Amino acid sequence: MLSRRIVVDSGAIAIEDFACRHPPGRGGAVEPTTRHALVFVRRGCFIRSANGVESLLDPTLAYCMNPGEEERFDHPRSNGDDCTTIALDPVLVASLWGGEETLPSGPLPVPPQLDVAHRLLLAAGRKGADPKQLIELAITLAGATLEQVDPRRVAAGRPATAHARRRLVDGARELLAAEPGCPLPRLARTLAVSPHHLSRIFHAATGQTISRHRMRLRARAALERLADGEDNLARLAADVGFADQSHLCRVLRAETGQPPSALRQAIGHPQPRPRSPAHAGALTR
Image 1 (cartoon, helix red, strand yellow):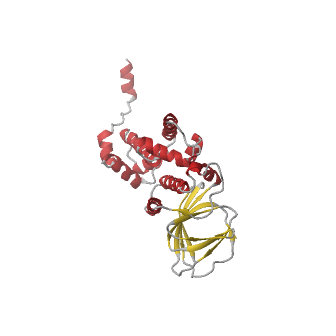
Image 2 (cartoon, rainbow, N blue to C red; image 1 turned 45 degrees about the horizontal axis):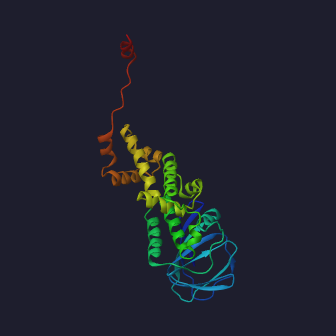
Image 3 (cartoon, rainbow, N blue to C red; image 1 turned 135 degrees about the horizontal axis):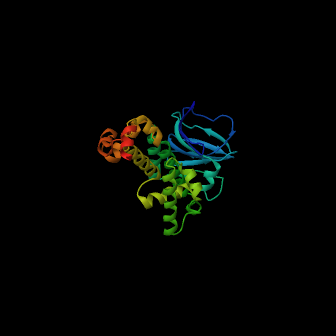
């Protein structure tokens, strides 16, 4: 039996949690894959046959899928296995893999720090993290894993000078100031850079992730509305891009140490009362 839970799906990238509970033995009929994906093994082991090549996979390894590959999965043990899949569209694959739309074949090593990053990604999804944060984490993980195979290919197109990197970060900040909800893949396409590199360079230059910067921009927009006297928190949360009112309250408390009600009282100013026609006329005489 195979079960799947979708953690997030943006179209360009999807994160899925798979649990396989097949009995030991040879897998079923060989079927061609239909998408690009990077698969991390969390538990158990199995044998993957792809285009006639067998690979034993366990939690120290990951593997890639490419459209059209014929796969079969055999299970030498009875305990099953669990995997996390990061599915990528062809444009995103090419941006991560030096312009090439075919991911590497064969097992990929997963050192301890990447295994922890993979598990933190899944844990963040279980806890209901912002989808754009999950997408940024997944792209960073995918790029770092592919670097284990060919760092020069992954580095292709990365800005080479400090000036170019600063210009790239400033361009990202400018776009996010205009549209805080712009997802990382589209942001990177607009700036003509790999999303993996953009995420890395932005963090190195600012000390925070793009998703964190995005959230801080939303918090600033919420503070501006509170200063103007906004008292409908549900409407405010929806208008500035938070998931709901409780999400808005959590972020503002984390950013400022105070709840929205206290912030409104501290920084708000009363709306000017409309003048009566008689009063307005008196001022003109």
